[in-house]
Amino acid sequence: MRAGSKTLISISRTRLCSLLVTSGLLCRQIVSLQERLSRLEQEREHWMLETQLMQMKYDKESQVC
Image 1: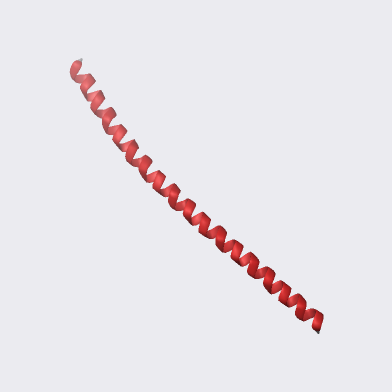
Image 2: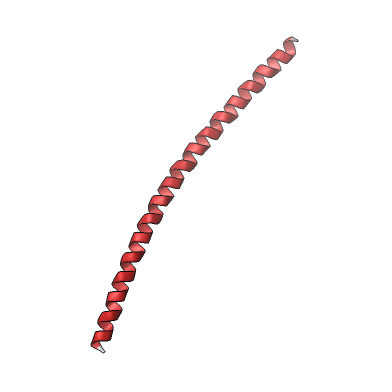
């Protein structure tokens, strides 16, 4: 019975190591996706402001004509 418990412990350690590696990979992926989201939100804000500026220029030109 003792040999069986060593095998169980060995399998559990292997599984634990695998889960830790997977956890680390997922953490890196989350950080990467958060950074990407931040960049995309900044780009969106930039283009929203650019659109507002173009709209204001268009409105100003329309009033002159």
